[in-house]
Amino acid sequence: MIITLCGSARFRNEIDETQKSLALQGHQIFTIENLNSVEITKEIESMLDVSHRKKIDVSDAIYVINVDGYIGESTSNEIKYARDKGKKVMYLE
Image 1 (cartoon, helix red, strand yellow):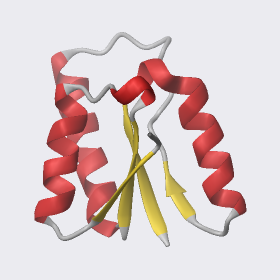
Image 2: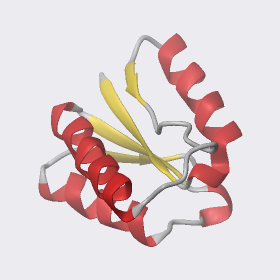
Image 3: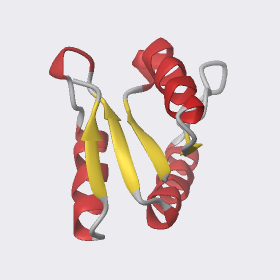
Image 4: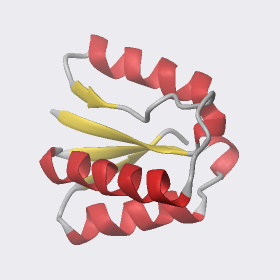
């Protein structure tokens, strides 16, 4: 299965662990870019949103990294987008 990870970048450790776990199960994973050292302008944020939606488009499912149940606005929008596209939505918690 092709899976796109979605969630807050603040959960970098959980993102990395989930990526490894799913990859070791034989899945192809699109992950969230690690851009901690980059200044994210509105233009870059918009470009990253478009790129992430393209990943969702070619995926079979998304996997939401929702540590302690946290789902932010951007991730909520990605969940809605994935559901509208008929993608399976899975959650860490």
